[in-house]
Image (cartoon, rainbow, N blue to C red; front, side, top):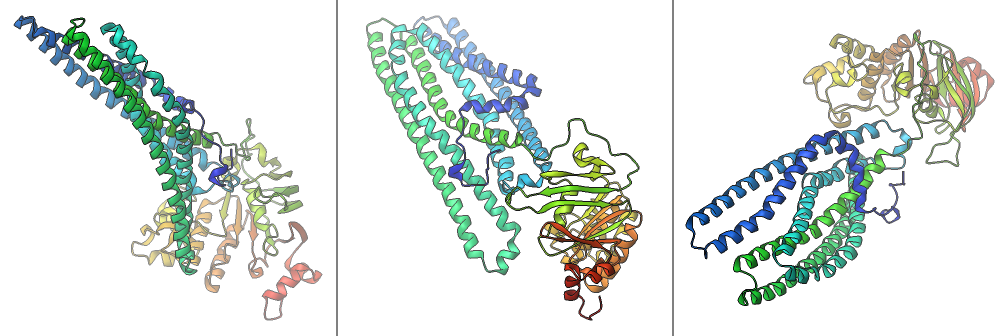
Amino acid sequence: MADTGGNIEDRPRSKEVGALRGLVPFLRPYRGITVLAALALTLTAGVSLILPLTVRRVVDGFNSGDAALLDQYFAAALGIAALLAVGTGLRYYLVTRLGERVVADIRRALFDRVLGMSPAFFERIMTGEVLSRITTDTTLILSVIGSSVSVALRNVLMLLGGLVLLFLTSAKLTGLVLLIVPAIVVPIIVLGRKLRRLSKENQDWIASSSGSASEALSSVQTVQAFTHETQTRSAFADVTEKSFLSAKTRIGTRAVMTVIVIFLTFTGIVGVLWIGARDVRAEVMTVGELIQFVIYAVMVAGAVGALSEIWGELQRAAGATERLVELLHTDDPVKDPVAPVALPRPVQGRIAFEDVTFRYPARPETSALNGISLAVNPGETIALVGPSGAGKTTILQLLMRFYDPQSGQITLDGIPLTAMTRADFRSVIALVPQDPVIFATSARENIRFGRPGATDAEVEQAARAAAAHDFLAALPQGYDSYLGERGVMLSGGQKQRVAIARAILRDAKILLLDEATSALDAESERAVQAAVERLSQGRTTLVVAHRLATVKRADRIVVFDHGQIAAIGTHDALVAEGGLYARLARLQFTDGTV
């Protein structure tokens, strides 16, 4: 995938309208509706082309003096109009329904794809831009499938059918009309290429604007705390203004193309009609034939004008389709194996890091882990400590297989993580991240996220174990209280306890705690620590902590420094060694006792 997170000017330009072929896989399951819509479209185009013949018969019928024949012509005209109305309504229903169905499938496919992408993907593209593709780009495609393509095909039929009937009506006048075509096609081609580039650029600026807004709004408290509103507003206004200027250029180009095409088209028609009027006076053709020719000429001109406008829409949709297909076909460096090995049950929880070296994709020159080898026995509690940036959290991220190491391997119960599906081994892991995620739903559903099938009693039991029951029960609707976006109704410590309750409810064989008690007060920390100790019994537990008081009882403490293991041992043994751990301990324990 191209780096869509960079400057818009650096991004690849849109392809030809042929990029719309990327929609074919989504249309294929609905062949029946597509065929019916095509038939309805053909019917309405055919009926529209018959109307001028009826008009000619009516006009020439006035001169025949046969009232009965004239009545038949009017009745036929009424029947054709009714058929046109029914066909148009049917076409609208089928095409619009097809467009809504296809776009819904595209949005679901995009969301399914992005939701399964590894964190490395989101290092290259902003979440706001992904949302822009799922919303703005798919809305544009809906407009094209539900309207523009149908109108384009109908006008193509009208153009071709009209030209044939023009020729049958008057070969001489039709030849004069065709002389105008090159003058119309040239500006469509020349300006159309520019319009395609401007359409892609406009869509990119819209995505950039969406990404900028998403980032600012998701961090609104930080923006306000640092009184950065003016700069943030200015940055968003700048991107939005560039989006507007890009759109203005695109609109101006399309307007110029429309003016040129329509002017040339109707100028040619007026000239041809002037010649036709002279032929009527010379009795070379009848008045009805001239009117028939005029109507067909207007139909052809209208079809050309409509196609020139729709061409711009199709080019914008081609750019949007290209972006969506690009997202759907994005290569994820973390993939499930083609022939996965199942994790044996029951799970023992034996973890091994074997000479693992890892560098984050965004920082390929720096090793986050360098030659790490670590074996964790089933049921063992391992504490990972060390300075910030030493590689502790990276261990958990690799164990969850959010990333794959550049060398070495990680195994669970003797099976490499890369040999199993991510869903298989993640199902036996419970994670409490450093920044707890609280969803915009009730407290009960936030905890139940750990195990969707859990009962209300099990949810409350987990909350009690995490020292979260009291404050949740005190909320206006208790456990059913809405916690707001990102848990704005809760304090930092309360969020962390809800996240711990979620992990407790999951009842997984492997427990990963990343600074799980960092935001708790002393009383809550003791309660949660006791709960974690009970929970870790019989489970393999990895605890990342800066506060050493929380890991003193760990079976082993692994000290990290600059991406390497500096020491391994118990609390007392490491303090006695007098290395990095002893220095950290002296800094944290103020009573002089370590």
